[in-house]
Length: 517
Ligand code: GAP
Image (cartoon, rainbow, N blue to C red; front, side, top):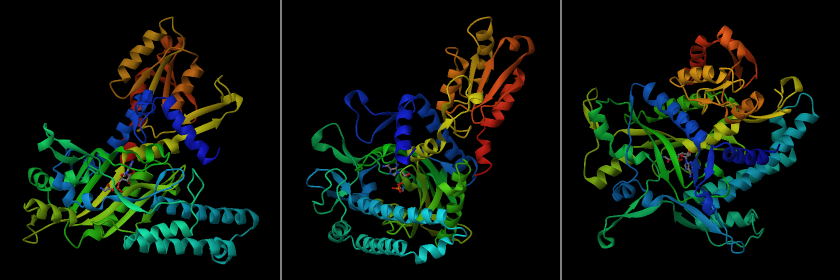
């Protein structure tokens, strides 16, 4: 299966099994907006809980906040979003399709990178004792392509730094980038397009104010900095964590949950002494990558990417990139935001946002390290890593054909932890199974099902990622034991009914992730 096919399969699986639906589907949907279904919402809640607990429960110097989506309009002037939160857009005059100019260039670079990797892979297979470093620095095709990449990157970085949109267009022309729809190079000029959604607040249109739907949750933390610091008696260094919706008028191309117009962020702002920010920046880089690795999808699926162009508020910034089915892409940003936000809010509000450091005996505007991760992107990363169409030999087929679709979601994040089945719908088995189900549901999210063959029921639970299935059979009524079936190995074992709760609880506990992160 190609990565493109895998991505398509994941999208249709999400719809069929109640993870994600297109928004307003009966009206043909709304571009880049999605709804989470019964199992999707559980998975999303579990990922959010993992993040929240790893921040607020595991760090005694981090507290939580839930600020409003609507904020005073001056917040966005102070944060720089009114003036600088925009994407460089370009239209193709033939297809009338609109693209982000920077994305067109980045995709062009990715294609050249893919050519290099193909060349390296081919050579790896051909030569024994293959010296990859030597090959990359001497093979003429690889060297030439790497030179192209370096040149485009240098020009692009320069153009972005100078905000030179004419040069950005020239790069697109020089790289001979064509519109994926029309196939032509008939481009408009590049221009900046603000990404914030605006609406009006006030009952009468004459006295209404334009306000914005927040494009990031971070500003709710900055404007509450002193409220939180004083009320929770926090001492620097300390952090404020928040999860919640953010809105951006993104220009998107078939990226499913990766780039949405309404999405959820999980952000933490860590306030530190000026001058100590780089040390904390590195600490948070380490802590965050550990959080990702703890899920066990493979460390090779993550990498750091330092920003070429720093945002207006940052003195250092990087992304954690994840290998999605469409390549390595940003899943989380870690930014050293200096004192930009707090100082700017001081200026615009006329209120002091300073901290009195009793050890130094002076007041200052703290510096900030931010970790910011998209919950929807995380959801997509979990699904993409967990999704597998597995071939089975007949001994393992459970009477249901030689293939199964299984979501190998870490048990602590799985939407449903245990499914309970009576083998058949009579002889007192449903009653016994229901008794077990009613007990277990006090501990975790469970599912009861009595329709279809056991094999079919197992398959359905595999498809939603349920780590454990419990089957009650006639023997159970005599020996008080049940069959516990494991999702990943498909192995079955006989366990006493009074041990189910402790076995399951231990395996599905978030502790398994938190202790590694
Ligand atoms: N407060 C900093 C900030 O918002 P960002 O890099 O623009 O930084 C942080 O966004 C994270 O939010 C990204 O790493 C990504 O995971 C997520 N994100 C951003 N835009 C998104 C979108 N349109 N759809 C889904 N997730 C998005």
